[in-house]
Amino acid sequence: MAFLTLEKLTKKFGTHLAVDGLSLDVEKGEFIALLGPSGCGKTTTLQMIAGFVEPTAGAIRLEGRDLLATKPAKRGLGIVFQSYALFPHMTVAGNVAFGLEMQGVAPAERTKRVAETLDLVGLGAFSGRFPRQMSGGQQQRVALARALVIRPNILLLDEPLSNLDAKLREEMQIELRQIQRTVGTTTILVTHDQAEAMALSDRIVVMNQGRAEQIGPPHEAYERPATPFVANFLGKTNLVNGSTVRPEKISFGPSGLAGKVRTRIFQGNHWLYQIDTDGGLVTVIRQNTGEAMPVEGAAVHLVWTATP
Amino acid sequence: MRVAPYLLSLPALLLFAGVVIVPLVMTVLLSFHDWGQYKGIEPVFVLKNWQEVLSDSYFHEMFWRTFRIAFFVTLLAAMFGAPEAYILNRMKSPWRGLFLLVILGPLLISVVARTLGWALLFGGNSGLVNKALISMGLISAPLPFMFTETGMVVALAHVLMPYMVLAVWAALQRLDPQIENAAVALGAGPFTVLRRIVLPQVMPGILSGAIIVFALAASAFATPAIIGGRRLKVASTLAYDEFLNTLNWPLGAAVAVLLLVALIAVVVGASRLVERRYAQVFG
Ligand SMILES: Nc1ncnc2c1ncn2[C@@H]1O[C@H](COP(=O)(O)OP(=O)(O)OP(=O)(O)O)[C@@H](O)[C@H]1O
Ligand SMILES: [Mg+2]
Image (cartoon, rainbow over all chains, first blue to last red; front, side, top):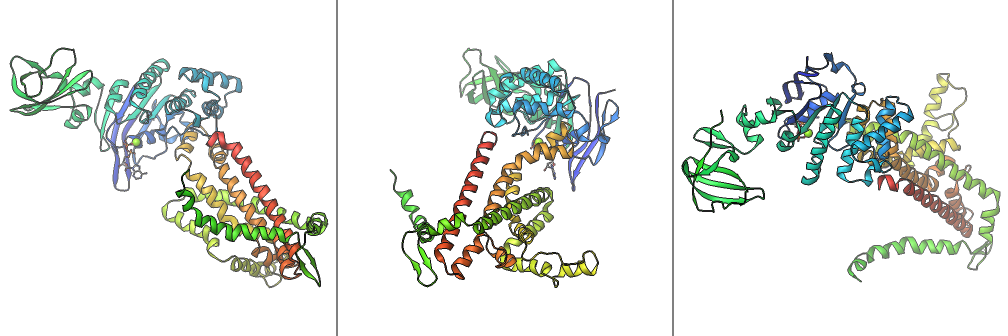
């Protein structure tokens, strides 16, 4: 039996179907990413699990028990909100301690656990600061510590990294994955960034207009997308002679599909090519190995092995 | 130095100087002039009025009453205004607009009309509410309202409530909409969320509303004039009386200036305190 089960979960706002019969089994300790374009119902799904939005139909079960019968305050979930929703009038330590206070943890034990958790997210030295006095990335880690310290059985993260710049986001992704590995908390992450979803999760749920289009490990979804929507959403694709091919799977060879380089763009670790062929425009990504590469206007041949 | 900004603010500065600074300076000067029943105002420099205002227990009582009333008005406005703003903020779309109008309504009606309304409801034996309560046998004598401090406090609190509601409302608007959910998810009950999360964050709003209400209550004229009449005077009605009934303008000026100075001291002191207390947290 799965740890957390969503059963045909549905939410209607008026006549608009925000979430449409979503079913999902989450194993204990698993890291799940809900991935999809804006407005596809990711936040609504998360808020239904948290208990702040009531489902129109369907069921949510935690270890077989009906979670919908439990009040939001009693569900024991750790939530990191998109806006962090830190308590601005409390110090970092006060923020993190709040959940323990609500659980009635004794002051001495509370102080110890707050310090431990702040160390875990690398903020041990900041416990006396107010949220206003910290950077976005630090605030995000406070939010994470506040959610982790109560030792939740499930961690819900709503686009927790969307406000960070690219470099900090990458650092936080690595940190998040590490923390999740160490603590082993079942985690559901909402994001619209496919790279983030693939980097972090054990399985991704690709959502579109309230429905799950594909549920599976990132690699599988990327290599064997169930629908054209999934294929397009997870990365660039080419439709050549009736089959879909990822741009990085195509290379230049002595023979193959003939074409002419229309544009080439240097992107640091790789080159991005647009090639005119008889089968239409083809996008090709080649690793930058330092070797000389075909220039614009050059005649090339494209080769690839078809995916099973 | 750039000249344009100063030039641009010149008209406003001139207007301010003309209608505020000049009359104020004249009032201060007036408070040092002499006055006699038959000789009228004499433009000399005496400290007589100030000595009288500062030493006579009649004036002490008057100022003490003024600030006592202002304090209770502020308390009442905070006790009712803050929850009112919170409930209003949680209302859904059509109701919110409607009730906001109801709450701001008093601001749209003349103070005189509003206060006369209170007088009609509670004034003496013929007041509607008193009559109804007596005929129901709930009370034997009419509730005293006219010429009482309680009456003044209630009427002033009603008049000034919108300022408190607006100040708290503005503070509530700045609240992260998810912040209450965040506390609930951590296991907090509704009362704990209010006390530990919402109240501390709207406290600056309540305090700034309190400063406005206090200042307006202490300097209010129309409401104390109608409810207190000449029997129960406060500083502003006292100054008015000295000007227009006794015709002792210099003494009236001294009362008015003292009220102003005392109010400025209270308001500046209070806002300093609030700023220092919350600068670190809310920046
Ligand atoms: N309270 C609400 N009332 C009416 N419609 C709503 C409400 N909340 C969400 N919706 C609608 O439901 C749909 C799903 O919203 P949701 O917030 O779950 O999207 P999302 O996938 O989280 O998008 P994003 O990536 O932009 O955050 C949207 O079309 C949205 O307009
Ligand atoms: Mg969302």
